[in-house]
Image 1 (spheres, rainbow, N blue to C red):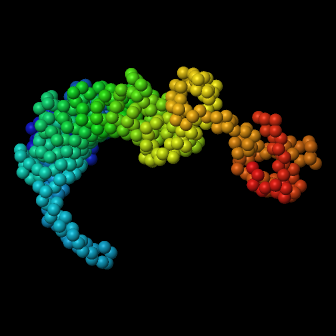
Image 2: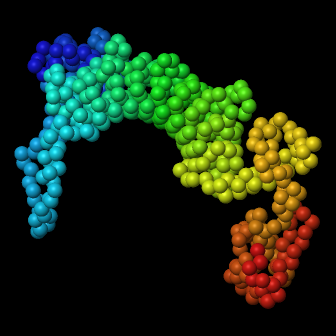
Image 3: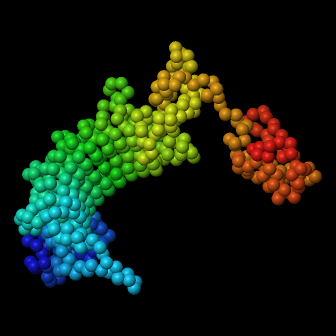
Amino acid sequence: MTEAVPSDPIGRRIICDGEYATVHFVGLVPPTPGMWLGVEWDNPLRGKHDGSHEGTRYFTCSHLTGGSFVRPKKANFGVSFLSAMTKRYGPNTEWNETIVIGKKTVELVGFESVQEEQSQLNALLEISVRECLVSDAGQKGEIHRSCPNISTLNLSKNLLSSWEKVADIAFQLEGLKTLDLSENKLFRSSNPCSLSNSFAKLATLSLNRTGVTWNEVLQCAVMWPSLEELHLSSNNITCLERPMNCLQSLRLLDISNNYIIDGNQLLAISYLPRLKHLNVSNNRISSINFPVQHGCCAESFRSLNSLSVNGNNISQWSFINELNKLSCLESIHCQNNPVMDSDKNPETIRQLIIAKISSLTFLNRTEILPQERKGAELDYRKMFGREWLKSGGSQNPNHNNPSMEFLTEHPRFNELIEKYGAPDDAEIQQPQPFALKNQLLTLTIMCPDKPDQNPIKKKLPDSMTVQKVKGLLYRLLKVPGSELKLSYESSKVDAFLELLPPSSGPSDTK
């Protein structure tokens, strides 16, 4: 075996020509002489086969074109953590205190002190060695001797291959509270309980784009006894299971950009006692149902304060109705869902959501002030007042008995009646159908001196004034406005309205 290959190559991560891969085979591949590495690329389009060559299987890939054989000298197995740290934060012997910009020499005031501070590794608290080819902890104890005070560590997109190698680093950082391992591919530990001391104080963990499944998360969770924030974005997670004896301190969970379709999958995590913030944006959720045992509040998500469901397939208002069952919910983000496009007026959509969820104080990052809530709830009474009456509702409390179908669609309606009183006849009066502002108008032009000629038809916006209509007719017919006779006729009601010329009426008549 060549010196370029470490003693434990199988399962190790490498980078080759800018592409990341995992080693699955080391050995000869006849008839070609010399040593080969059999690798599975992170990018399956980079490979040539699935681990077999000329009828012989050397390793197995998850994708038909995910595998390749590469020479060891082309593979980079990475560097130790302290080597990456020293390269990024150590003293720079080529440091200059001045730089030239155009024809001027500029002194970098204060940069020397920054450089000195960075060179003192043991004083650093927040470290980022993202994409620095870190593959292991290096010699035992050297991290603790050189930089023991790190509390926030970014190890994303490196060559770490197992939780054991991560634990070797974390164990030497006794104050580690925030750790980002995104874009690493880590093999599961055979004994995760044995690694829990390495992450004893860890509060925030990011595993975005690591390929981890929810089942693997639950198996690993015993390693993180104090975890409060967990970020699992972009991991192809499709299903959830209830955490048992783990993640009980979790306050924030981000499972955005995954492939959860059934919203009821969320019930599996709904009993986490301290969960306050949940992000399930950019999944494929369309519906959810929170069981209610006592009263109108759900037993699940008892502490949930903030929910983000942006970019899902929510098209029915029943989803919004269900959120009203969450007693502590104060903030939601629900943009880029079909239900948000169900009305041309975004303000109307906002009012409906506010009226349907009684506890909301923020909607899509905008505060809901008391006056806005009052207006939304009063308008909701008016908007659906006629349906309420038709379903059995009554302004007489003794006879108010709306149908179950109506209350399912508008579960807060009776609550709003108790709060503001029943809507009266004037509030729920149907708008006049002949009001021009509610209609798309068709202009029919007939020429009296040419009775056999087909009439000319033009569509008009409802905001066009009579004066502008006459201007349009003059351009079409070259007839002065004083000689035109205009009238409006509605097919919905028995109404005929003669529109007077500007001299006889207001010029902004619509």
